[in-house]
Image 1: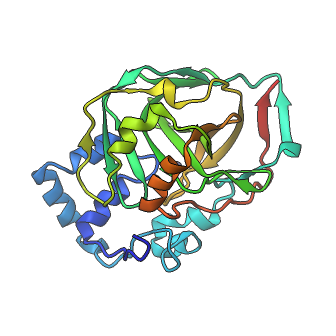
Image 2: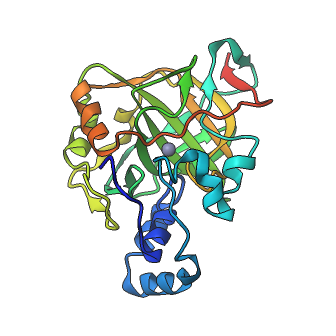
Image 3: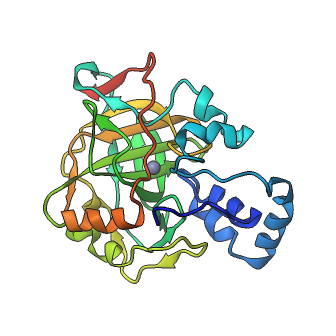
Amino acid sequence: MMNRKWQYTALSATILLLTGCGQTNQAVSSVHTPAVAASAAHSADTAATVPHWSYDQEHGPTHWAELETAFSTCRTGQQQSPIDIEHAQLVPSATVHPVDIHYGTTPVTVINNGHTVQVNVQNTDNYITIEGQKYTLVQFHFHHPSEHQIDGKNAAMELHLVHKSADGQSAVLGVLIQPGNANRAFRQLWEHLPDHESEQAIPLTEPVQLSHLLPADHHAVHYTGSLTTPPCTEHVSWTVLQQPIQLSKDQIQRFATIFPDNHRPVQSIGSRKLYTEQ
Ligand SMILES: [Zn+2]
């Protein structure tokens, strides 16, 4: 897994673009029908020579913008994610409200898309509200080590819950993961972590109780950023919970075996503010 080469056909490159951070599971399932897959292959002919992005040296984060013009924001963007969250820079604000989390139970499918293990949420009942705007949970996935830093330090892992509003805006809820007690909420999912990249998402037999994935305290740091994977699209509303969750060292190691390093380094915060609730 360490020395994997990112040599894909045009079709699989297209599928992986559709399954990256922040994309919808509808896009994932649509490419599984032969007719759509065939047309995707046809329309992707011109992209056949475009190298695919990864976390390795050659096609890794410092080269993403060079790989495809559509990825140029990865270099030119001024509001990129992840960032280092420094406690000294937090701005308590009376006008920033806590994120309102409405998570229930959902059937899921799981896929190793070559960049992460992504869990596609199969119903639209789960949402968060940020400053009056509703965002529906689409998928969640993991990074090892964490992408956000706290005072210059990475956590062991990070969970990203990716939401979309009705008008297509993205909001990501980030949860840092530290080594500690074994986490039962992740047990079923961890038993079915796909070791190898696939184009087919696997349904889990048991539904996932989403609220059990989160810490008890939902106080958070709020800032405006981007997707942390190409095309690094901006105007993403980020909510990084301040309380981490725990996985056991064995659970973390299980993921690390599949993805030894799938994190983008921190980006310049620029003139952005890091808001917290008062
Ligand atoms: Zn992510």
